[in-house]
Image 1: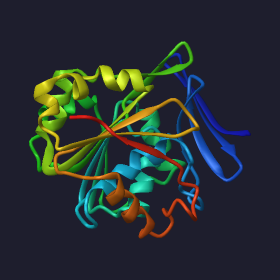
Image 2 (image 1 turned 90 degrees about the vertical axis):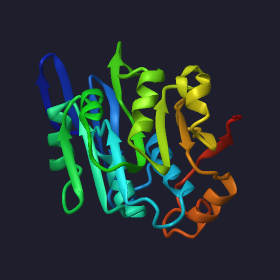
Image 3 (image 1 turned 45 degrees about the vertical axis):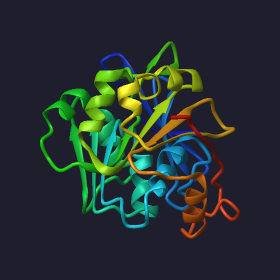
Image 4 (image 1 turned 120 degrees about the vertical axis):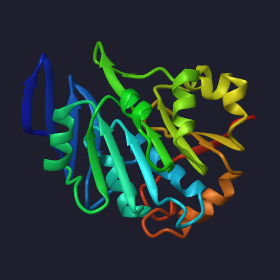
Length: 248
């Protein structure tokens, strides 16, 4: 693995490293993004953040909000496989935004990157709702990734406020226990807003990704849609994931 670019700002060390054909963004030694345009599937957590888009019917995902873009791997996967009309990415770090544009190629028609605190931005937002909201808000502590915003009832309600009536909220958690402790699972009024809920995981890491759907969906529907999408059929691609329905 070689270092392509490095910068220290405000006591934080940022690095872009190359591993084979992939670029990786590290912040204080914590991996925040990995992407290879020639092989967009990572075999890791970023795939889990993209897969829930297929819980919605083909063509239903036109407006996407990504909170915490890192280097933009999820945005690039969604553009490649889902092709939404609009993607808004909100990121607190100006360095991450610059890296996403310069090294990961996150730019072009339909993509809007915003430098803002995700909580403040979402509170102030008054635009059209989103079909897919991806919450990947992570920082680091002692060299380990940690969620930057607690998934409590206030945050969960804020996500819901800007979700389309048929939409899906996707939230990345460090592990299964933190997902289950969130308001999305433990707050009855929040849980009642969703017709279906799932936990996605992969053998590559401990992350548990929650996918919460306002409309009914099933793992079978997801599998069938993935198989019909070029490059995403698990039988012929690097896509490896586990999905479990969560009780209502």
